[in-house]
Length: 113
Length: 116
Image 1 (cartoon, each protein chain N blue to C red):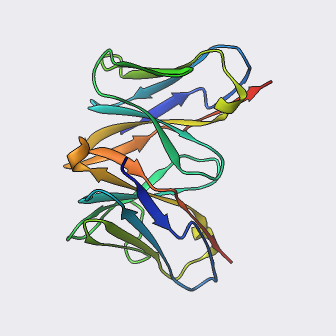
Image 2 (image 1 turned 180 degrees about the vertical axis):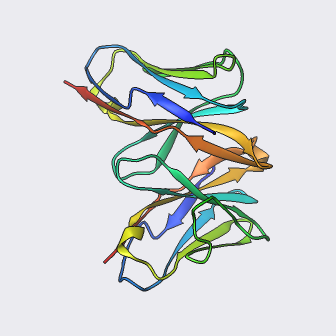
Image 3 (image 1 turned 120 degrees about the vertical axis):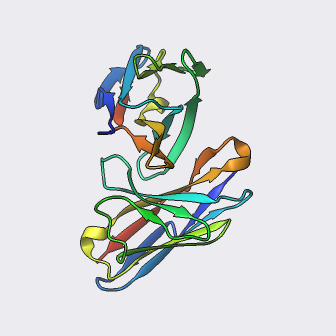
């Protein structure tokens, strides 16, 4: 069964702290995506990770990919309130001949002043 | 950059009626588009894959006759919710693959459907 599991599902943290969201996936995937979703809005693309060992950074967010462990991480450095949102990882995988995105459950991040 | 536009962004309809949601790729051709449904505080669930010029491929458990998908051109896919019921109320999101941009997937803004 195809599974993408995020951990934790809920995260409340203080501004200025660091934390990591984990994303485990179950199949051999050629791409791993991270998205941000604000309440009532659609998805905003954050990162696309294409290969083992890939690391990408944008501001206070850094994403990495370990294809051997089937694990991706999203690290938040010195969190600020504006980063409060729900974060999804998704793997792109071939299912019955079609390329599809399979999403994790989402991690709801709340950053308190 | 590439943009995927959905319309309407919000719609309220009466039970038993049908409602159509459009998904357009504005500056690229998309042979493949995807339709997702998202209930409050849940993840996105893929409903179907829309292929230009052919029938959509539906995910298990999604009723083909209830959720009609048409992908008549390389820039437009439509989702029609037929005989809508309150339980169909949800956030519907489309995405489109841009083959000439490394198969990057772009998401629309989403459409809120409320069935009363």
